[in-house]
Length: 305
Image 1 (cartoon, rainbow, N blue to C red):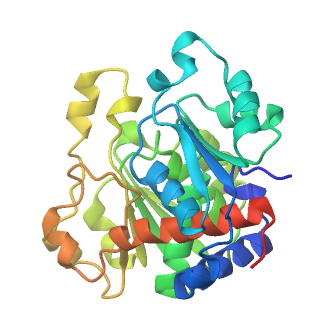
Image 2: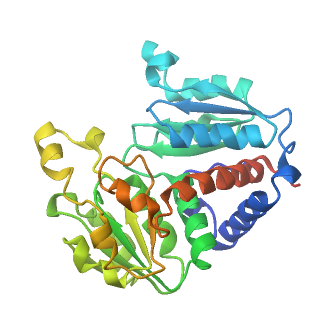
Image 3: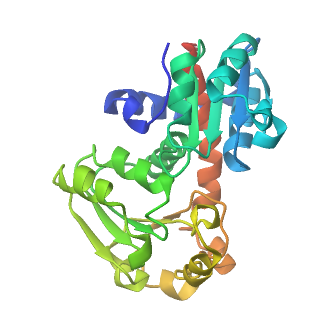
């Protein structure tokens, strides 16, 4: 039995196989429509979510399986003080696989150690968000045709953004990937990512504060929102929330085939006017999230079609 806590739980070869499966699901949905008949996915979400929870549910339903779970800690026995360990032991009696989101880093790992069913980390605090990373990789590979030889700009909240941390960890395993880290001083990438991941692996990167200074060299621009829920005081959030806004004017500085990605939800860091630009791929990205989660559920349950 396998769990998914981090994108690094999959080798590059396994990752490529998973993305190939996701592409096949996209092309031949009817082939997989009954693959998980009789199987149940539990979505244990201690934190609010729209895309991640609903895309997991859509993925299981598309596979012919069923879904049960809760959408906030308040609507679970966590409100009564039940531990994650006890919750997963109970869930293991009801479901075949579990997707868990929790505000505490490492919560999904604790669950996986007590679980008798596969556990997927659907986001743990500011730490990891592996299925978003799989979504990002599938989107880039499907629309650019490759995951190597790219320059990717990561913009916004690089300090607390778990999607950014997971994506860096995954992409450094591919050849000639360069990073441009675009953030204000207060939201720079954590030292452990800069030193232990980028520098330790000899990965080329630069840090800049102005989005305009980076645009023309990028193959992919990955925008993120400044996350209100990770801030300790409202004052800092208000000061930084509009630091970056991607507009049509800024898009004119970019390559004609640059992709704009965003894990969503968007607040105001991408102007609505950009949505009509053919390079804006963030809603396609949300769709790719369903295909990759379908592929992951099949892989972890050991189901071959």
